[in-house]
Amino acid sequence: MQDLSLFPIVLGVDYIDLAPYIKIITDYSQRQPSIANDKSQQLKHYQRRSSRDAEILDHAKLSGLKSTLVSQANDYYQNLLGFSEELYISDSWLNICQPGGHQPDHYHTNAVVSGTLYVVFADTHPKLEFRNPRLINSPQSPEIRRDPSRTTAYNSGFMSVGNLTNGSVLYWPSYLVHGYNTNSTDLDRISISFNLNIRSSNFLYHSPFTLV
Ligand SMILES: [Fe+2]
Image (cartoon, rainbow, N blue to C red; front, side, top):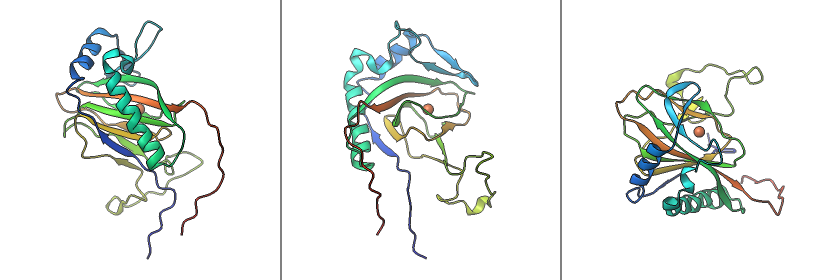
């Protein structure tokens, strides 16, 4: 049978050389206060909590990193997803997941695209997993259990992204629920998360895309 894919969800993968930035990121984590994740005390978030705190990507010495991330995100948004608007980074935060920690499922609001820059990510670290938005359990959308040996990209409840390393950057639609399992290594898993939004929209388009 011919395979016809409707409304596929596309993620973007890119890369940044972290060498110029790694010491600045490390210094930031030692200077700024962190808060533990509600559901995982070993997962520390370094994020703005008051006007005195600086977000990591607003650090003057990370301006080159920030502009590269904005450029990559716009490549994803405009060239892969096909939108015309210009994205900007609305907020950013550093995550350090110590051994034993995990990232509970969540999604990002007030954003159209979200990204993660992998600062320290080993092969043995837990991969980021995305929930299938069509199959998230709820009373409104009961899920039929499937034979795990017949899991495909079409019927899986979640998918993880492999082949990422230090410096990899992942971009995805912000509405996707995501998280990762327990860090069972003895090495911190370190990432920078960020959200992107559009400043304004000048046009509205309503034409459907026709599959031929
Ligand atoms: Fe997240």
